[in-house]
Image (tube, rainbow, N blue to C red; front, top):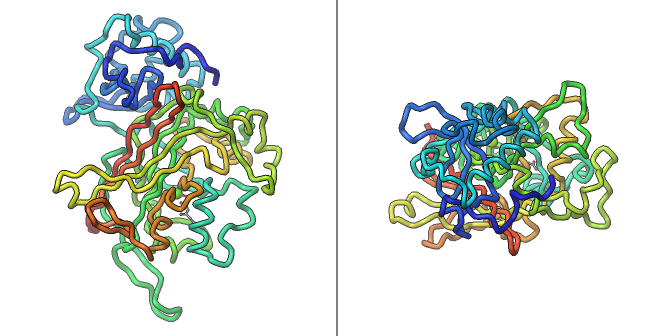
Length: 433
Ligand SMILES: O=C(O)/C=C/C(=O)CC(=O)CC(=O)O
Ligand SMILES: [Ca+2]
Ligand SMILES: [Mg+2]
């Protein structure tokens, strides 16, 4: 993706709130979602964030965007973005350019096509056929591995294979998702006892980046790593809620199952890779680490394989909500610290001929940074539940309690450039049923 006029930091919009430097959604961002007016029976349709508004794509006359964007606009007006995602990078780019011109200061204001974000409700932006969760943070893998497998925290395959597992698409929800605390089996007190059964007592969140597949590949055909980013529509925030006690008992030998398939929360907005082009970062390896196998190596990797996206977890307890306190920050990390790149995840996923489809979702895996306080889960922050964290109001947490709301945020930042925000992915734990 190349830098073009849509990235020009001097651009401003006739939507005044987009010009506030604190907005997640300046005119250089233009992320996509699927929305309708909250509480209405309107059909869902595509929208683009601009300041505190949604630009209603279905309210735009194709003539206002002209050729070649009008064909892409027709696809992006639908109630899921799958067909638009399938149309490929030239279509995504054409619509982005047309919307950038339409929203610029000086262009004719299209007030009729704006819906305040505060008055909108969102749906999952695509029909997600398949969801795969990777494990790309070596900091997370090492610290979680230490808790689950003290003898061998980082398994020998980690530095060769982008590890992942197949997740569950049916329980993916959009920001605002509320779900009951999962129940299940947990490890018995001794090897001869029966396992315990009941509500999870070690419920956790995972701070992840979601990767939406745009164009897929034919079954049997691998996507070459140097072409992989052209198959990626964009990135969102993803919370892979995890029941650690269920996980510890069930995960060997086949990996996560009921510990992670009861709920997964994503942000409504998908930030396109094109919007993130000025925020690329070098992909880093320690000198002692192996070089990637040829099918995972490509010319742009070392210079610009990573995305510089700051990530943050905030927590609001039921008490905080009752007392009118905002969610409090509990940790921050950055997607640039990922051990495997987005292109490597896509190439690895398809190297055996596995077909990806438009709208498929890949999770990056929990993004923990190198410092302990940059951990992307409570399991890590609390040292396996041994050391509670203290919130600003004095409440303590090792794991999540009923009524807790976890909010993920993300933003790409660079001095001299506007903030490219991801909005938020918020979810709330309800009591077990
Ligand atoms: O190390 C393990 O056994 C599993 C750790 C995880 O929780 C897996 C996971 O969901 C991947 C991730 O989020 O990084
Ligand atoms: Ca995960
Ligand atoms: Mg999940």
